[in-house]
Length: 246
Figure 1 (spheres, rainbow, N blue to C red):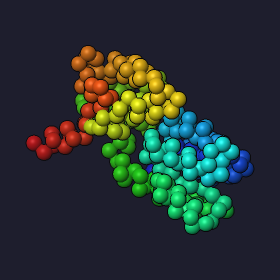
Figure 2 (figure 1 turned 30 degrees about the vertical axis):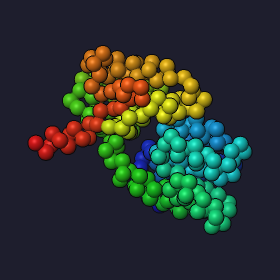
Figure 3 (figure 1 turned 60 degrees about the horizontal axis):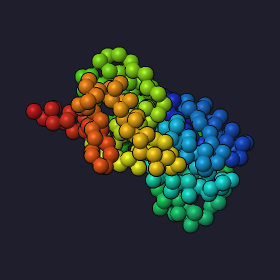
Figure 4 (figure 1 turned 90 degrees about the vertical axis):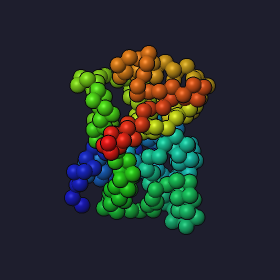
């Protein structure tokens, strides 16, 4: 199958404890221009989801610590990243269960490299059609521009350096622009389940981001506080649509 330039450098997280199978999948995906990240357990998969922000996850059902269905439930609590389930079982019940829990597709082992790459491309196309507004360069306004694919942020035409945690926080706020994210939701998405009782982290890193992005951090225009609830990134898409209709 000829590589599709549209998908070059998309990050794929492989959650598979069989080293030979993981290597087989990695080689075929890298041949088609994908970036590949690996996790050999469910807990590691959740950490990689938080840290690497993959574009798609290939999730094996049989894992050494947590079964893939439970991992899928944990993923869906914090992210809508596309997930393709991988399993050696062909039972209809497993397939239905995975889809009901939020999987986007299901591939039964053994599978051909061509079939797997084709499924990955198809699921990414569907996902990216829904998220076109946060693909490529995002022009929030004349001051702030963000490119999540290249992990770059510009303020007043200058490249701004963000620490990994600041970047993850910004990513989730912008992905949910216009919606309020509670302190608990932000903690789980950015830091992980074990930090759910540490709300001061959210306040601290929101302040860090505001100092780097806002013209006046004491009067923020991008990251807005919803008192007693959480934070909301300005709905720049709605604002642009209103401006264009004038």
